[in-house]
Length: 337
Image 1 (cartoon, helix red, strand yellow):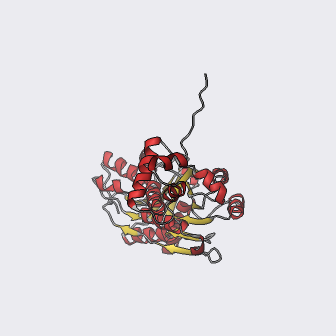
Image 2: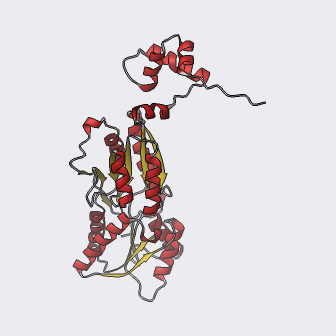
Image 3: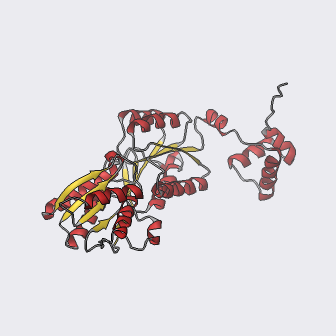
């Protein structure tokens, strides 16, 4: 025998709390002044009877929801975990919630994901990077939602770009390594080169070497996702070649840490035999026996600034004048370079 489940309603919460349905609505939506005693009573009543607000129904009435779509390239390392934490903290303060998806650095996946997330009628969308297909740009324009692009400021944003200059980070690393006397370099990357921000860093790095008369022996880009194991394997292959570099520039700290592990296991001195440099300044680096030279990025702050921007009232957004918010970076000199 099928028994239809009857879900608790706002009226049920109102009866339980001894208040009006309008009061329950105001408490649930955070609108208007309600005393703490009444708020607590309403929330306790809702919890006791198992009431959950139907935010989608509310969104359908108002043509928007308290959701913010967040599109990230990966959760495979802590870089974007930090960004997502900043976004979530900022949105929570504004009574919004993130709904997110992962593209694994694929523009085709981004197209599909953006269209799917926009079907939930979010109030805004946060995208990683500045390079998007016409499909994605048209979908966002048609939805009329606010947009924030994060992690990169080297380009023209749709509305606002929040992050750092990836090109400048590559230039800063190259200048530091050149100042240490290194002249022959290899670049080690991953994701089949689909990480466009890593590509911008490489271009800045490569141009700086060229201007200094130094040599980039090769650009080794693995098809596999970034990992310490892949970094260790790539470093082993690079150092087994007849013509060895003075230094290896890795696209991120995961790969660079793998390089450190290979050098330690083979008694290769850093930086005397080989210099290593990474990117991101991840917290786990503090646990390594050798400090990695790297670029520290403000990942949490990027997420928090994006969350604050995207959750502002409509009147606070100026979509007619795209702008950038440069949060900068810091070169952290370690023992590997």
